[in-house]
Length: 113
Length: 108
Picture 1 (cartoon, rainbow over the protein chains, first blue to last red):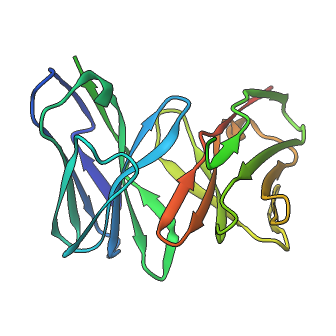
Picture 2 (picture 1 turned 180 degrees about the horizontal axis):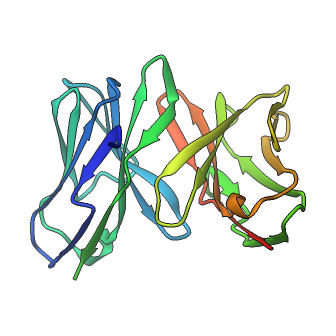
């Protein structure tokens, strides 16, 4: 089983719908992240959390929200999805002792029509 | 200007070839550097760290030049399984910046 698990892996939705992407980890890491990846742009940070009570905006947080329900769970919500949010979304974790070494989930491919 | 820039490629090389990728970063305060590997439609995975003194892991060698703000990855004796996208990463403080990646195709 993967150490960082994302659900759903694929989702097609319509403009205006609310979508939640979930991430859970068994690595015991305190830090969790949500990234999106678009062709030619690399990974862009949406939100990050260093512990359950800590939530921080990344480079492209507009249109997104997150919830850190537990140390092992970090969910990303799109309150009202729009087509330019079509992308591949990755959850990642890291240990505060080695913060720059990220471990990624397998990705959630979201298509907004 | 992107904070971390890479040549997108693709690099098409035969098996056994030596190939080098370069990466530049704009934030002189960046502290740590890495190369990640990403297979098609898969998640990125850490390949190796990059140090000023150089870092070698088997066929892979990574180098950092802080004065030029330049990072390199050298792959010797390329294998078909090396075909992937290689992401350059620079970190500093709470920021981890990924380059857009360089695509490598190794052909028989």
